[in-house]
Length: 125
Length: 125
DNA sequence: CCGTTAATGATAATAATTACTATTATTAAT
DNA sequence: ATTAATAATAGTAATTATTATCATTAACGG
Image (cartoon, rainbow over all chains, first blue to last red; front, side, top):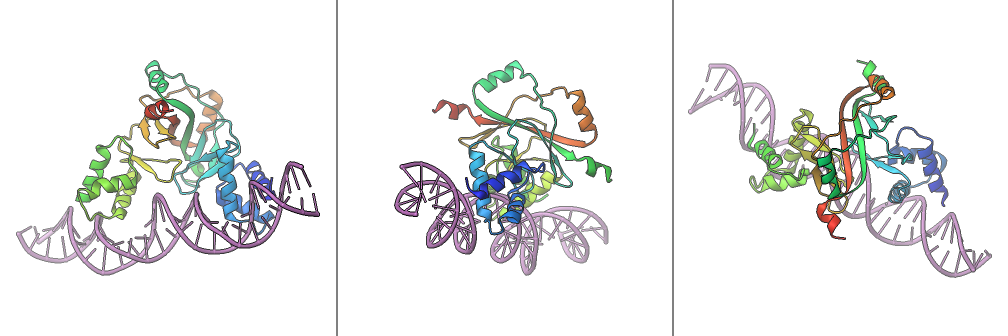
């Protein structure tokens, strides 16, 4: 395991912000000044491919990454762009007609996202 | 309302594929040959801003668009990239401790996505 | 150690989207 | 219908995020 990858993992472990590749790059560069952005992308992608981390799609351009692979919803603040973990999981029963629909497909994962205003942004009107 | 926008709306109405900007562009260009891709993007974005249509994030680069603004989950096929509507909505009760969490935020929308293999792709092993 | 293999840094290339601007079309008021 | 005001368009350039390339460097197993 290269030092670069170790520090990339540290970046993800030590952040609750679900950092983007750029944010990880900043963290790593503070410790390995000449690290390449490509190395960050390459490592994030391979860790994602091997299911070590989760990739989060966002309305704004950049993808975000989560070291926590336990299924849990995310909350996206529309104002400040922050992404938070939602501290519960919905386990709703699937209706019968829907289970027929699902049986005809292979479902490998599901993601639940909320959007709105976070605690800080909803106070500042 | 410009003719361009009318045809862009037609494209979305007549498709069940949740088309990308590119796919809409192809449809419109077949009817207005010198339409500009920028016009397609501009219209899709403004329709999205005014909540006329829904923007769907995808793991692969391009965003997709849905004329159906009724909340409903989407199913993303990992093999062929197809996006399907899921014919049911989960309405699970929110646990009490979670409702506390949600009260401190403004929730404006939620999206539920499934990933896996679609009917065709799950047969062809 | 030392050779093999894999990962890196630096940079170029690509893909998706957005910005710019001169021109054209739409609209509202005559 | 005509016209002036406004908004939207086509065409193109620029930007942003990400991926590819490749010569060099680092990790690992014997």
